[in-house]
Amino acid sequence: MTKRLAILALVGLVLVTTAAPAVNNQAQCNANHRSCREYTLNLDEPWYKVAVMLTACDIAFGKCIMGI
Amino acid sequence: MSWLRWRRKAKAGVRAAVLVLLLGTVAVTGILAGTVPAGGLSLLAFLPDLPAVPRLRIVEIARPADRPDDAILGRPVAMAFDGARLLVADALDCAVKIFSQDGRYLGSFGGKGQGPGELSFPSGVCVDGDVIAVADKLNLRIQLFDRQGRSRGGFVLPFTPDRVFALSAGRFLVTSNPTGRRSVESLLHIYGPAGRPIWDGLEARRSSDAVTDAFLNMILVCPGQADDFYVLFRSGDRRIFHYSASGSLRSPMAVDERLASTPVVMPVGRGGIRLSGFCWAAAFDRGLLYLSPPRLLAGKDLGPGRSVAILDANGRMRAEIDLPCAVHRFLVAAGRVFAIDEDEELRIFEVAR
Image (cartoon, rainbow over all chains, first blue to last red; front, side):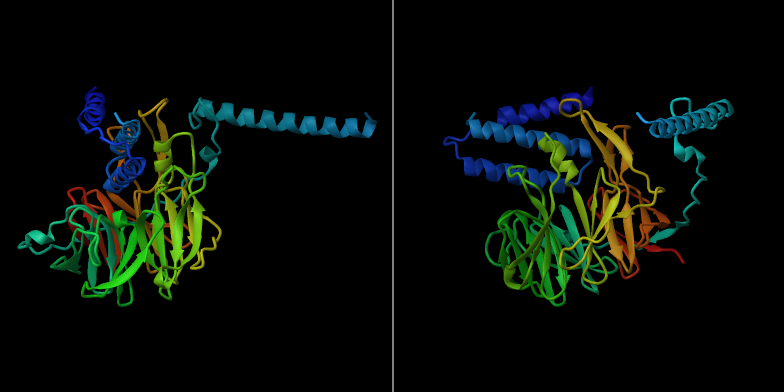
């Protein structure tokens, strides 16, 4: 239950607090997504956390591409 | 159907029936005797137990207590040994930090930036004679330094590098994580002097889910003894892939059954991600492979392990070391185990004699 809440909070944080880009630049979105994934993979944290963070990277990428 | 063909088929049928009857009898006898689980018949149940592996006792080498602030590791992601000193790539501080064999802090080089000698998320480090190569991840390049940490050039890459390993004759093996944006991606790349691409290999594994792919393609690379290198997948595949310096694959080596994999289903995505954790960290030293299996956390997650299995060149387990702490990554050199624990601290161990 606590873990589920933590995931919801993390996903919410990604969706709500990240600033929407004024100009939707795909190259910038790609670069941010790449950095996010590489950073996560190098965290070397337990795999559940890595899976959640990679999912958050993908959500942020989708959000960036759509400009929301 | 001719009579001869009918007779041959009948014989095969009788043979199959006898085999089924025999196996059934063995299974029922086993279940009644309590040696075989009623849920299924496993051939392993009839094999003798594998001999126990000797456990080595280790002692920790105390590090100097009066450490400067610069010696604190932010995010140590890779280590290398230059014969006398330990080099640690610190991705958070964008620097390579240098320690003596006893853990004394000797200095650092790098610093955040994009210019020559500056780094942005250094994720790999290796030593080739008098040259130190650093995988400068977010600057998409390999940077070269001398032993004093002075910049000696480098080369730009068409992908984001992860780790870097020195091969002979000025060649470097560079690993990468798949981006998931291209249909075919290689995880291994060999570059010659001045950054000339020589070889790409080990195609990334693909599924329908990008997060699962990230786990399926988590690899560990250990440089071997004679310019060769070993590649292991952290989950799913229990084989060790042995490559020559030119990138040709020698026959994959199956790992001793005594080194168990840990299955886990992570409740992420539709239906969860099913993984079989095999190895969290690995190292190679003097003909022996050192593998640290992952540890099951809270029954459904995998994290860094507290033991190291020692395997010979045939994948057979020769000994096991119990560590006093879980280790994220480690390196074996000069008869010592240099490890990074869960608090990002450098720990140094030696086998007790």
